[in-house]
Image 1 (cartoon, helix red, strand yellow):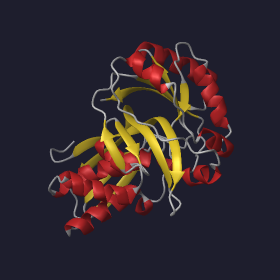
Image 2 (tube, helix red, strand yellow; image 1 turned 30 degrees about the vertical axis):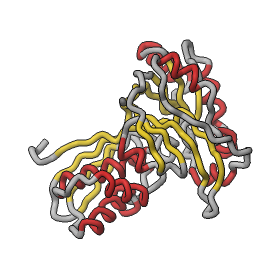
Image 3 (cartoon, helix red, strand yellow; image 1 turned 90 degrees about the horizontal axis):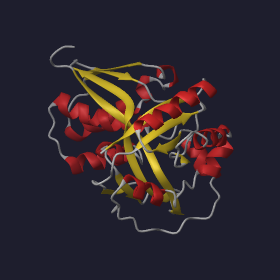
Image 4 (cartoon, helix red, strand yellow; image 1 turned 60 degrees about the vertical axis):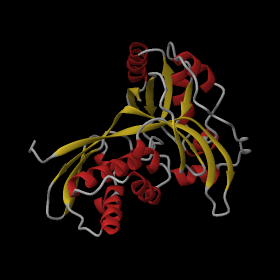
Length: 288
């Protein structure tokens, strides 16, 4: 790797819970969600170049849209217009996360791309300005730009950092069926959840888990209509030993189980891979 080439990690996002609390006049749903990030994700490598090139490799490269439609290009265009500079650089995206899977792979890629272009182009690191640009790329992108646990409200743009979470261990499982977010929201017809207050003031992992069990993902039924396999994934996770609870992340189809430690999570991964070799399955640890 050349000296002036650098890599950044784009971590997967998990919605530990997701409540839909209403709908705005413009059609966007209002939500409350605890979003966290894990040590599984895509990799972006940046290198200098006179113009902008995007190369994609990795296990899910074939599922990506054309490079010009990629959110990384859109992030570059927004930054270049904002700072009146030229889009340039060679970016290699290693796509390790399934596409359209409810764990913000594309949103995380674009958020991390913004960080990478800021460094590559020698731009000032202006957090508030970057957050405004991130909102224009998608509802999850501002949280992905932070990349640490956040309490999100509104349409996802109102965020509060949660700095005191204990380590948590997960298993992610996806049946390898793309689940488009707009279709899931179109089918959502459940009652809205009442708004809650969430302080994040809990001490041990077990206190967190006990509280998280009280919440839910309000999109589960709608996502299961779009992708019926989600019910099978949730059931398979819940049946693994030492799984505290299993839940859908975002609009799906990725689901997650919560475990006491990395060994228990890895045991669940091994069991699930034997039973469901066609699924994408991965252990994951909280990024704090």
